[in-house]
Image (cartoon, rainbow, N blue to C red):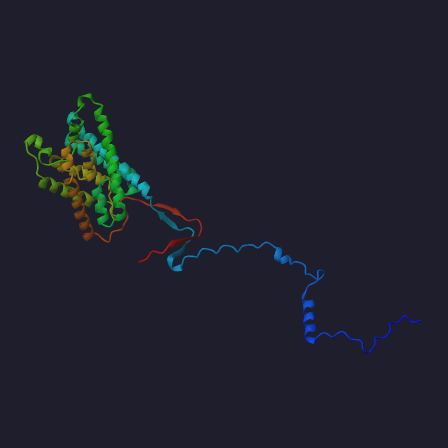
Amino acid sequence: MSHDTPDQPADAPRAADPAPGAAAAASADAAAAPSPEAAPAPSLAKQAPVTPPPPAPAPAPADDDLDAYVVPAGTLVAAGPGLLSRFGAEAFGTFVLVLAGIGTALYAGATGAGALAVALAFGVALLAALSAVGHVSGGHFNPAVTFGAALAGRTSWKDVLPYWLAQLLGAAAAAAVLFVVATTLPALTGQERQFFSSAANGFGEHSPIAAQTGEGFSWIGAGLVELVATAVLVGIILGATDRRAKAPAPVAIGLALAALLLVATPVTNGSLNPARSFAAAIFAEGWAWSQMWLFWAAPLLGAAIAALVYRAFAAEPVEDNLLEEDDLYVTTQDTLVVEEHRGA
């Protein structure tokens, strides 16, 4: 007996065939839907840590802003002292000058030393200070000398104010030492400022010669002698420190100061140096401050005259800062030097 399914009657209803468009869409959806077995494995590249890019380098300066050159091995190189070294040298030199000069002047009456001893004390002290530290700072020790050297083209203008400050501090320190010493003498108790006034610079009734004549030189005569004497001193300094000079500069300058002070001392007590006048006035009586202007104006004007004469008759000056000397050394290998470009 056969188990075949009986044939469907011809009139029985048949299942409708799917529309062609619907069948295509269904096939596309089935192909697009991923099966769990066919899911792709996660990419290892996407799981690796991302390294941040290195920072962008700073923009290099333009070539126009830099000057570069090579210093060959065996080259002799000069390097001058720094500002701090020169500041200290100026303060020390002025300290020595004022300590010896004013210190001698204060006790000249008691010791009978007289004007000659005072002038020599200033001159010898200047000679010694120039020999000791002149090669560091140029050996100015005097605001008028610094001003004259700058005007003559021998010193940079940017050094004028620092040098003046150093000179005033050194002079004030020396005067302070002398004043403290004077206060330890019982005979001067209560009279210390009057005692210090004997070494201050003045004119009129405070001119030294007034003690013998009853009258002193007017401000015109006092100013004239200070102006001319300072002009001569600065002229000698500029000439003695010129590269063409043959005589030892410290000796010439020290002797010149001593000789000029012998001329100026009877008239004004011999300044030729605003720092010296400033130092004495700090611990003197009030009149010394009221007459201070003359002992700045006259020496500075005298220094200016000397500088202008030097520039008029000397060759093109070299900015060598008088007695200052550069440190010299020899390079042992080729050296690349890069500097900021200096515009014209």
